[in-house]
Length: 390
Ligand code: AMP
Image (cartoon, rainbow, N blue to C red; front, side, top):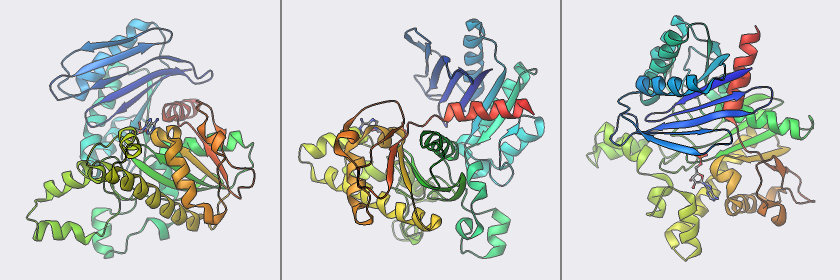
């Protein structure tokens, strides 16, 4: 079965056409700078070269139109379409078929993720109109977290306010964490019960998973909470928001931009949000970059412990996403901070580069440590297959 996976971001639209059984990727690409000057589409076909076409992309619908045109020329039948949706909110707590009604739900919960959900709803609607016979499936990134126990998702705010505004921990990266559980479980042949999944990319979150059930996660109402990220501050005293406005004179939007786009590793390093640049500068003696890396590792280790409490234990820790998969330095730093609990990685195994799931634990480690390349597209395609099968 061939599935087209569409992942519409705030100003980008990634796509991948793959076969669910063989995991063969026929084509993939990315529409970049949607709604901004200088937009283009990068497209790649299996065994072929990457092409970059400069094209005007005023909105997500036009981007989707171009993607479907390109893929129609490919002559690979599309059996289903999986749409990644950032926020399913209180209405979409599992993957669901695309209908007029479910598209309405994506729009209804959009105030929780306005930069993403509106564009995503437009793309889903366009695909439904253009390919009415091909079933679409909405796969919310928040769905996996909807099974978190109430003690973990509820905020200690007045009940009437929380109920009215639907405030709770929704989390994010759920599809990635679900995949990381699946791949770890497969790799360990079922010998896994309590997993702390570490999705460490430019956005970063942890997830506590017990026998496939999500028990807690570090992102909250929005993806700003939890770990220090590329440009996001992660958890800080919530009163800082009021203080910035009252004493600093910043507007709501300015605080929002500051915390989401101007903070995190970018602010700490004073150099870049990209951890490759930061690691390089730290090696060259830049003290701000050294501190940024130390803080990232410290905060991650601290929140790993929070996730361990949700599980009341841990048998496996998995590193994933851009930093988790590629940075042996950061994996070693985090492991060092967790050494007191008996976690140890093998430096030689840690240095190996590979696209496969691998065990990097030291022989005497009390906790298994894996590196698991995430594959959200495949997870989404699996959901499409399952729902089509019904
Ligand atoms: P993602 O959001 O999962 O694509 O991850 C992006 C992040 O991964 C960026 O901060 C990159 O700097 C980081 N990253 C990718 N490759 C490496 C690497 N070899 N070493 C350190 N960080 C990396």
